[in-house]
Image (tube, rainbow, N blue to C red):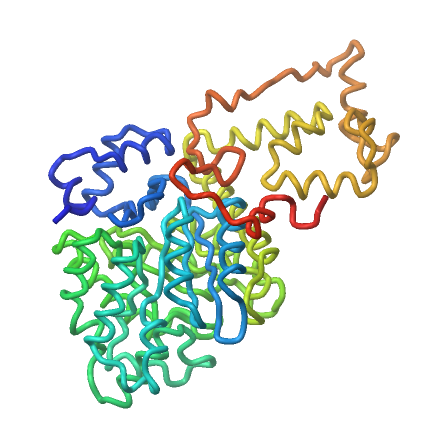
Length: 479
């Protein structure tokens, strides 16, 4: 049986995946190996995911972003899911999670793995529930069968809600929104109806054995996470966190990589404490957070309310951010929602990396600022996080090619453009010196995630996309 990245790192081996990660992060390979060996970083890398371009998740490295995709029992189809996968990769997702709960689960999952150069995650209890008439009918063997099948299909990491214990469930009494995690609510119902302990907890070591065989990474789910500000930081959330710390150590004892999921709704002033507490309880395991949303008042704009919290979480030490789209709490995301969610979260991740001093992270900002000051519109578009949208917004009011050399845009016009006025002032003799600076991004020590363009992966092993999915990278209607 092949060993996991964790086992090989502990033995002192520099794997091909570690070397590739070091290249993408502009780090020494030994730094990567040591972080993995100590459990401070993970490289989700299922032996069966042949087209994967390895990446790393850990607070010492560039902040990563996950995009959730997947169908529901009412909406979406396999073609739409492949389009969403392609959009997610194109707009900068570092990983994707297939959260499908509807039809064609196996074909969607297998197609995603076959076409994803990024790690693919799942929540196996979702499929298990579709196989029974009632949640109470779930069995440990069924759960293990689903987990092993998905591992065999090449899934790189799985959310396993093993930390929700029978004794934790009453702690949710008095909450405003109860248990908002799908996995957490399913398991709470199962435990209540069967008067038995969480089977994912009681059979955790058997799951570890499956994960070790395929090198699947645990994403220990926060099944009791708060679903509103009022429920944040309560006894239920922190009781589960203590169990997740225990499970982190158990998984590592079995040579399995682990990251830990974090809360979804947290007041701004409690975010840093949440990150620090997780890092202490879970022995530095990478923290993977959903948002968190810092206010509950903005349905339709929760990609913004959550990106604010995500920036603070990443600044405090969260290693990966799970994006939220404008459809959060309202409906199943479509391609354009994926695009908007990823834009918000790539901004959050990058802003946090600048704030924490990740090597070279600000070089991208400097290069774009220089192009803006020089009125190099083509270079600005090229360097933009979303070049198609930046160009489209500019061209809505000044579409002609001649405006690509203009020393103004439609916001200020000719006479009131501050940068043009500043340039003109510096061109005459006086105390203001001319500005002449240039940031060479080819020499930047920044990780690939902090350099343009987004969505750069080694795609040589990825099969060609069907024609219906190719338009995901062609602008989504902005041109």
